[in-house]
Image (tube, one colour):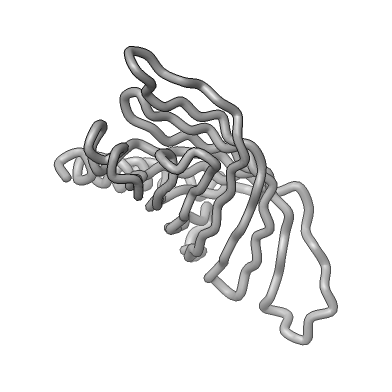
Length: 173
């Protein structure tokens, strides 16, 4: 819990440092940068490496998706994301193609792809490439020219020791 508090304070300070630069900010390029904590759902992973791990990632908007929606507040897009979460001998790097839907400032996302994972095995570690996916919800704070967001995601993969929840804060560029 001490690590969570330290990372939370660091994230808030980073947002505070970036905020004065908002006056120079122009148009978003479709890149999101996030950092936070990952909480493994597997008991073995929690017992070996702890209940909270570092997590971070990048997401890039590939294209806007147009629908004949009667609600102009609803938008959707296709994104590609590269994340990392891990601690000690447990690491996962999911590379995913995602569908992201927005309704005002709230959004939800789901994606699938490939994960590059590592788990302890005997006296070493096993590295494997497996199916990976994520689902999440978030909220955009768009009061400033450089919007920041909070999101909750569930990451899953064929390797159950690398499954769990992530809580993130981030910025959109």
